[in-house]
Length: 213
Image (cartoon, rainbow, N blue to C red; front, side):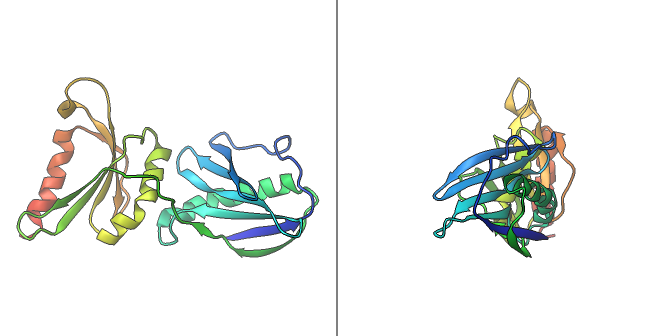
């Protein structure tokens, strides 16, 4: 997973020559000495960024960083999507090329974004955790689910129990009858499911009931 850190003396505007795939968007964020181009995928959520920064010598340094934790299996998938995007943007900024060096793509750990509602389901007999539920009201598409899974990875990997990302309730009517999209993210990935509480809750209850049997 190589990346290129490039130092050059001239930086051109990339907008007129850089074209994104239809499933990718990019936003600019200011940095103390430059700007970060943050890439987002409709399916995988935030992929990472290309930081373009000035140096004390008057040069420009470009560094690509993949979002996530190194041990998260999804980080590799984000890296595979991010790397060609960053390389294309580097070429757009610096079409003449420049001196650079290959290196492993650095990982940018998630930044704190406030509190995320979670629930620890425990065994009634021994009190040990048997499931970890994350309630993501902002998870309205696949990418938002992946954002939440990436941000919470350290928590559910440490606990090593079945973990689920639960999106907002859908439709109208009493909450107990409204389904929600639910994604199991640990210990293995499951397919996205749209379940009512009376369909999902028995799974969690069964985990608690079977723990000490």
